[in-house]
Length: 299
Image (cartoon, rainbow, N blue to C red; front, top):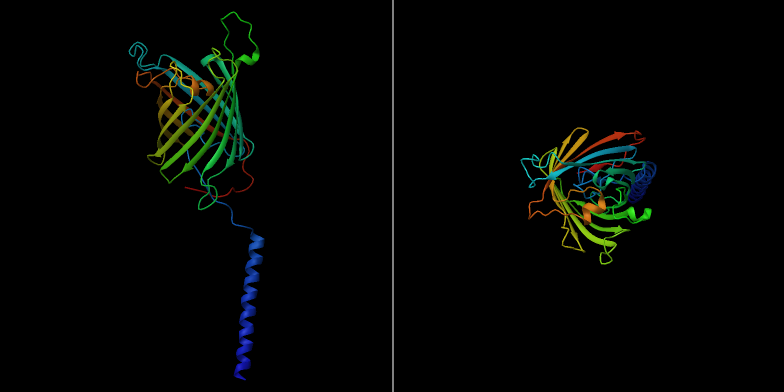
């Protein structure tokens, strides 16, 4: 009799356990898989200084960036007030119709250049799994609209140039982030036949967080084609966040702000003191409020 009751209790316990497992499976099927967790704020802006980052406005959000580069600090510093009397400007606006795609346009006073660009997020860095890096593709098309003075009838295509960047970014911890950016620039028109139309480079940038709203940044682009007239661009900056605005203050040997020019045609040298003070000011605008909560972002 005791054996009989023991067998009955054993079957009951197995049945209850099986029902609990089936109930958990049913609950999981109803609730769905746990949302993926992504790392956020690898960099504070969509640019480090000039170099693109893996960041872009969220879905339904636009971003306005106003950039200034003043004159060189070492050229008649008192007369030009350390370059502040001489300035170049760039303005851009971009919009993200989805969380993974961003497009926009810009205009630089240098060479009166107009540009249009796109940015596509390929992978996001996961928290505790998934992709170890964020990967973003960036491309821009640029039109130089200054008047030619060489007396030659030029094609419209002579004014065009293009830049492409593949951005590999990683946030290592709450304080430090870094990215590596293989880059390609194509000029439809070059100065002489000896100058290549396609010019390669690799950018490196880093961000070190100093406080809740400040961070130290730096970027450098190593070029494969190295003519004597141009130098590798190197910039050091300070990011300051003030609510809806981000101020990026920096010193750089690159004065140009359109992609092909600053990447491959920087005439200034840090060694010679050809340094330019400048800033980027960014502000975001929500065009469409999010319909549902996004996946949680950590760090």
